Image (cartoon, rainbow, N blue to C red):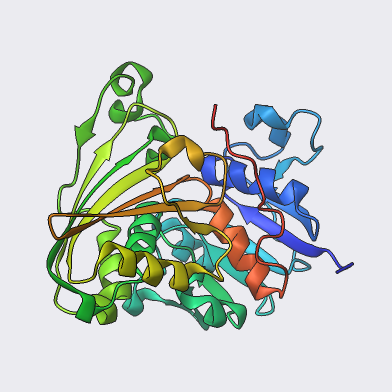
Length: 325
């Protein structure tokens, strides 16, 4: 493909905006037309994202260029809907939103725009034909990838999940629980059974898991990026059969891999990949899942969705080497 896809980014100064800029600068089929930031307008991108010294002369602005083909919204929750309401985005411009504003069924409309929930491993064909995408949440992505291959006839009783996330999951704005002296060497359970991502998980998995209730306890961990979770499911299938079910489900999905050995978080950091591992213990299926919350849980998945929307190879610009050591 010779044509460059012209892209705009709103909210480019945060963690997800920074990751998006890094990906798109190296993407073989993309040109960044503008990256907006209210706080840093007029300043070079590399002054905010210092790892980009020498990579780009792009400056943050506060403009809307109607010539773009896709707009990424990397705004705080609640701000994306307001942005679309207050700014005239041409109808031909496709929108990929990384907030939670359009993820739930009753909230997927913004004016004349209708949003598709963008989990490629579940809705690849819908995404290919979509004009607007609601990018899934990071915990929601990991939980769904851990459970998607299962059907209601193969499991019973409630599902119990524990997951831990790095400090970047809380965003760039400093908070008590993201401060270095609090976070490092520390863990904490938060929002037990009440995490906001469970609304989208329950909606997306309702038809597959029937009446099974998902009980999720998230943890804050003393590291910067990544999500590792473990789901405990009462399954009637043998471990051998479960591995076949998962392998078959993900065989055509380039970023989700079923691993025969136990996995760890470092295997996926700085990648758009999800690693899964299954084991059966005393009749219980234990599913472990690991993703990078800023990539497969946010900006990497947004680019994966863009690739599908524009008919590009799904992995274009996303084949990163992990920082495993």
